[in-house]
Picture (cartoon, rainbow, N blue to C red):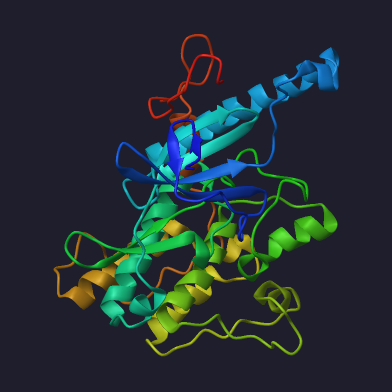
Length: 346
């Protein structure tokens, strides 16, 4: 017998494969397919008799705080995307668990991506850079970028495009995670400063952890492999960087591309270029490969390598501008995409 969650008919029971602190699966509603994820924490206290009144009220208050933060975050993510970040359709509580529902994207094989000519691969990298840049300009950090969190799909004009998924680890750059319990991610894509924060409990995570992870992903899309390092001595790329070594960037597509990726994979976050610059440079290259006329960029063929890439005035204001305040001083946001099963849900 089919299982339903808040009206969504599950294709199969939710599973925990590679999903950390959650279960996921696919479901349908009104003949449309969706991806659905169940968060294992927090758990809403449905029965005060089990915990006692005082603890029940504390748990409820904690859940209410969680819902408020997630509503603001998910609304900001949707607003920051113009189609290259998977759309969050629904966030709700059903029983004692919380769920997020997103559009389902029909994926194509990574082998199809590897078989593309350079122009097609640069097109994908440009799309991803644009998507991440949009998050950054909204003051958000994805924090768990990896190849498994990129879905490749066929566009309407029969190109292979890409969308970024798994958005529940995003955080506001002005409120970064500070403890091991708050930090998630795959160590292959982990920036050196993330490891240092976990090991030494000092430092701050910024948007540059996304730049680093995307540099790894670009290398995989273009070459099919990770950047080179001494795998006999190190298990992960960040370990080599922390020991003073450089990652080996495959130069099969020429110095320009290898230097762009290298500028994303510097040890120190301040030495990495911004995703906005990456996006601009990839757009220039894509137009040249496609035979399109240059846009309004002054381009001499060199990468604008920013040794000290501080946030622009526009970037520093982006979150404040996005989280505009009303007369009461409360943050306003668009919650139109949140649908509830009933008034008692949230």
